Length: 179
Image (cartoon, rainbow, N blue to C red):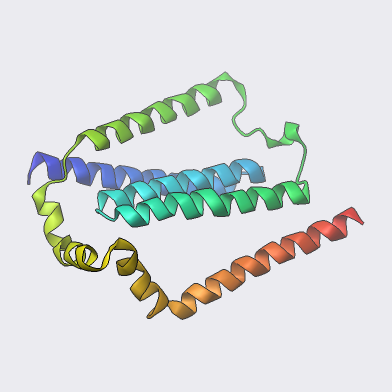
């Protein structure tokens, strides 16, 4: 096995562990704001895994749509419902919590820097040749949109309706508390 393959394998599993750890932190937080931030961490780790798999478009969409747009909606709903006071929201209390958070942030920055400096080994590109040829012919968006709006249209529509229902439900709950 090539050293570059080991490099990518290590980083794939590293971001997998980060995603699972952040997801566990997400479901164990008392504060909804910090839980949302852990969910953003999970989304970034998943985006890094997609990029390692040469699915750059999916990785970018993961960051833009999920970590960006949907998290803004979640935070808007949290603010609308007025869940708790600022003193109750702090999960990382004290100097040690801040030092550990800083160390984790530096480690993630070092990983991202290392990934941007490395080259993708040919052994990892062999499996994606057909997808790359198709995306070169039809474009990357068409390659993703074709199955999304054909085979998976029902799941896509159900997901959008569920998100809409969740937002409407949050607004209704928020309105009932204020009256």
